Length: 286
Image (cartoon, rainbow, N blue to C red; front, top):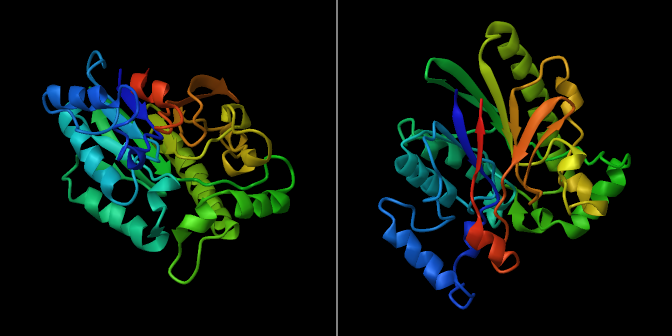
């Protein structure tokens, strides 16, 4: 049995300058009171039992800071950490520069942190093979049947298309759509390959964007196509054992299209402060 701790949407970039929030100073003090605990992020002392693997489903921190935090988690839990970027990692950065930098910095961790983007990490845990296939995923904007209208809405209303840069211009919906199609094809091919080559192994898909409309929570309406894609039917013949995502800020552990899907987001400090202070990671067993 593999015990997996998963988290998303920690939004640690918003933890600065929050000392005026009720309970925040005590929250920070409790971090320093816990031996080897990361100095920022959620309090983890309440996690009981062993942790074999940690999954971070994006929007952890901007830039390379999320990799630093992942390394601290690996030391605290004495377990490898697998990380995919969300959209917020790339805010105020060049996506084509930061993405390979995230991969390089994680590679220097000597097996403690794995950064995935259309790549996989494999582990043997208590004799069981576990493969984690990861990517940001983005979306196809087709959730409501009108991708063009959804892309136009996203361009006007999603911060991604103001705050993320490419080498030559600001990111646009057609760029993330192309990334979605590459990731979708890669996931479909590699889940099928692993099911064929290692039928007894466990397969986990780790994405930031959600794989099903039912995972949207309050991100429904016109924003929905920027948060989720109806992708699970692609895997009906060769389902993964678990799909972990973030982005929607909707906590759940569900069965969608016959596939186990889970998310454990923390949310925005300052907007969801009470929930942020009480946040606990998700735990699943395979």
